[in-house]
Length: 349
Image 1 (cartoon, rainbow, N blue to C red):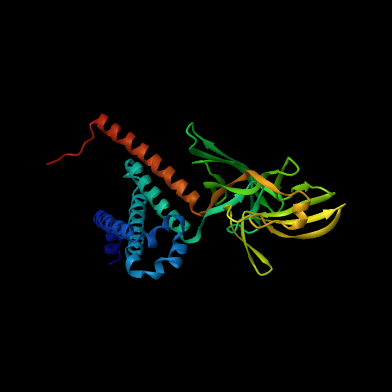
Image 2: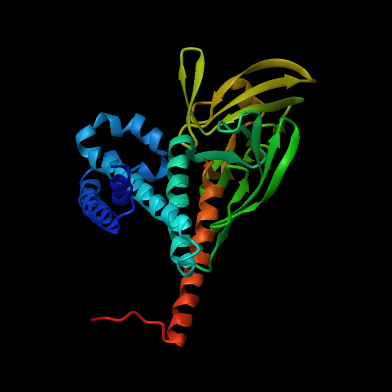
């Protein structure tokens, strides 16, 4: 009985049946995905367990093909593993098939690595970093990522073609890894992979002309503007889009729609007023008399980078699997031509 079960597990016919079923279900599934983008649109950006919790479990009928395909892939991996084990038991008499079975081994390792990473890994897209900003890496407790520099690369027509970032990974206050990343060149540290996803610009202030005083100034966080009568205006915070709810100021976004500044007004280094000032609203009389009437000359823009942070514990196993498959293909190719040169061909009756 056990021998019969083992024979079925090692059967080439079983592999053909499973492969055919996987192909057929995947074709049907691709149509389901096409007509249900709200369910499957984020599949590539999430691990399996994240997608299942957020989407798959809410539509079990539409996502059933996906789980069935995964189950059949596991069965195919088991079937391939049994074939590989059977070859190992008879390696002395069938060593010439080493190439084919190295390909089998590589396939098994890649499948195992894929499921391992899908169920225990994490994916986080669109993590926004300003230059100099440090943020905690949720997937690696105690680790922080800092964006040291960022530069978009444009072609002759002004279209972006690449994104160059310099990043540092810290554990506490100590840098454990750093380097440059750009398209198709990630930063890899243990199971963490960091790749650039996109970038953008935000307004962080304005270059202005003080019309009455006939000189330029900056409206940005940290700027100081000297006015008449020994009055100084310190800009403590700039929000490119905000609104007022009672006594609270709520930041709304990065587009320059309703800019506001939190200022402190002082005379002879003594504070005389502080509070939020919306630039589209009439200026307080105190600031008008001090010569703060202005005209905006240009916005002050700052680039920010959107990074993708993925963790995949199976990545090294997948690398080993791909190496096995590559060696197997080369070995099988060499073996084929060696047999052909010797005239070692099967008789067909």
